[in-house]
Image (cartoon, rainbow, N blue to C red; front, top):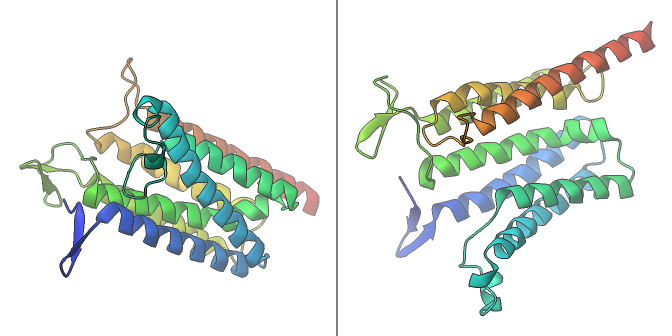
Amino acid sequence: MFPTISIGPLAFPTAGLLTILGVYVLLSVVERAALRLGQDANRLYSLAVTTVVAGFVGARLTFVLLYWPAYRTDLLSIVWPLNSGFNVWGGLFVALAAGFFYGRFHQLAPWPTLDALVPGVIVGLIIVSLIDFLAGPGFGKLTSAPWGITQFSVRRHPVQIYEILVGLLALFSWWQFHRDRLFAGQLFLLATALYSGGRLFVDAFRENAWIAANGIHILQVICLTLMLASLYGLGQLAEKTAVNRA
């Protein structure tokens, strides 16, 4: 829809600008969440920076390795800023690994740390959906609903807007419960359950969903697994907390 944003005579890629903005907002949200939860904001900010940088580097290097024949004769193109190309799964794996080892090295408590990080993660996912809506290849299924949007000359579900609303709901739940949380990990698991459950429903309206050869929606399977695991974790931690208080 809007692959570029024009500022005077200059045209900037929408995805790039929103990514920069998203990283700034993500890091700010993590810092503020840590302060509200009474945690070391500087340490968690550093953790978030480490994770984000590692994710970008990992995503880029994974993409380069997958398409090495295109880069081996022009190594400068690997780091040339105008070249795009990132592998989401590679970046996610490297980011999680970097965050895990950073947390272990600095002896950060897992559940409280995740409680502070999850708002930033959700903000990042919201930005990804916004980029997909404005400049990405994603599109929803056909609809005659009045809130449908016109893409490729037909009306479709604004599936990315649905995803953004799901993210805002998860953020609202974090905000509502952050002062009255009963145990460490509650905020992370609750927000994860709500977001993954919402995406499980919303993905049904996506036309270009990831579908396996047997017709299974891959993202829905991932979301269902995350939702059930989060709900189970909530139950286990709540039971453990009740026993300790008895």
